[in-house]
Amino acid sequence: MRLSGLALLASASVFACGSAHAQAPQVEKNISMGMAMAILQGTLDQCTKDGYKVSITIIDKAGNVAAQIRGDGTNPHTMEFSRLKAYTARTRGQTSGEFAKLTSDPERAYLRQIPGTVWAAGGVPIKVGNETIGAVGVSGAPGGEKDEVCANAGIAKVADGLK
Image (cartoon, rainbow, N blue to C red; front, side):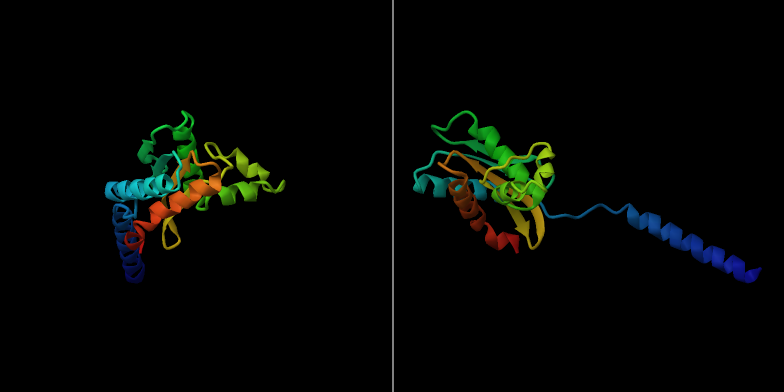
């Protein structure tokens, strides 16, 4: 009887500690406003240097817009398209161009059913190690691969903060 009482007490203490620990807040990496602004500026600088008029969207870890800018002289659709490219890169943890190539395979075309994703280059995930903490999407350059070059230039501006 004494042994079973001791076992019951030990079990109760484990359950009590477990539930208290489960209530601790999550600690996660995410895009800060300063980081989003630096990426926007770096991306815009590269596209301007290359002669492209673009819109840029930065998505945070949760898939929400952290920052967005519509460049001078851009077409109306570029704001939403840049958001969709960023969302695709964040959701998939790969560039939106890689997602386009992946889903061109008929056996993987079902992935195109993911709501809010697009199949065009220009969205690049923002990563700390292997963890995707956001994404940048660019729209307006004459081709998604050019949008992607600008997005990578923006991310390069904050590379030290992503270590």
